[in-house]
Image (cartoon, rainbow, N blue to C red; front, side, top):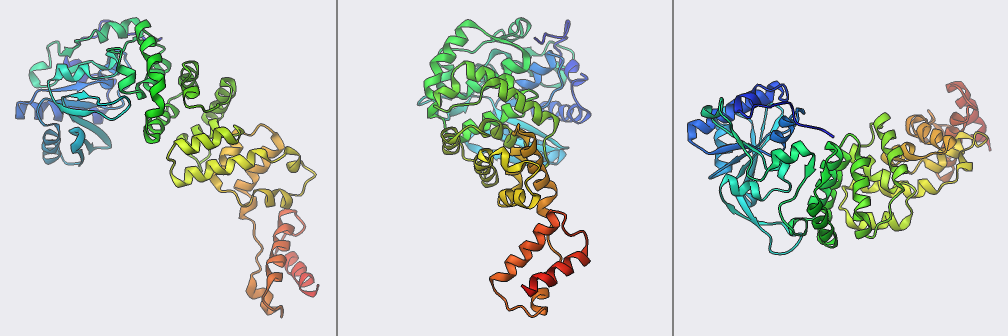
Length: 425
């Protein structure tokens, strides 16, 4: 379990000068505090950045909350320091892209949920009220921004998040937390696994109450939080929490044994092929050899991008191909024919998760070698030999390709001889 840094000073200067920040984050933070002073705006650094700094971890994102108009504050930052802005008027938020960083700037707000699992209605509010709408107390920590806070205790902690960090506890705010927003269940698993924290007893009970509402989530929201888990260093730890809490059973989706998932994610860490992303590998880990029921339910729930969906559709039939079809006594051309119509991403996923050595080798050779082998001859060459255009062209060119794959021909002269023989038949 992670613990707090020893006696961390809670001043803005300590944060800005911390080794947890990159040089770019240090510079951007300085710009933000100067802008807050110039505009006399009540702004705070909030959430994960403060949490990770207190834990002595690298800060990977800086989120700013502003009392008033967060989007206008972000526009002022762009006007003064450049970069690009993406505004989300509905949620009163903006993202400032600058110096390779994405800085989220939000309006301090409260949220109201009309129904379980729906996106909230928001309205402007104070920083203290804004902290109360967050998922867990460890994320309801903020540092007040401005030059006058540099040497003063700048920490806002109205809900005991600092003590929960010290205890290694994940604590939600109220009994409706996971009913209002069931995606918090995914986040609970992610934080518990990443930090080694335990759920506070009431929070565990509240989480259980939220399980029936998981099915009310849109597939896009499930996809987003699952892919955040896939991006973790050891996704299988968070997934084990989800399985233990019956999350996947709530979706009526069977999943592989956790030992098998752990083995698959270890393969991903060791050798992720260039053809697939970490997110695609995560979904593939769930769906390879999972059976038609699991695959159809995932594909029905999650709005996959076309290339990911195609790859996941491919691994179903690939996984059912008998390993005997790929044994060493089967010619490479025959093995190539079994695999040639599958996409590169599907082959890469199957190679990652297939356990049969001979089949796995064939998948790799198809991906890296066989599908790049083609005869030198073309239809023009066949026409020059006096052959009339027709179905025979495809048969002859395939015969040449097979000969290259099986080592029957080694060079262009060998191919010309075989082509001449084929033309005479």
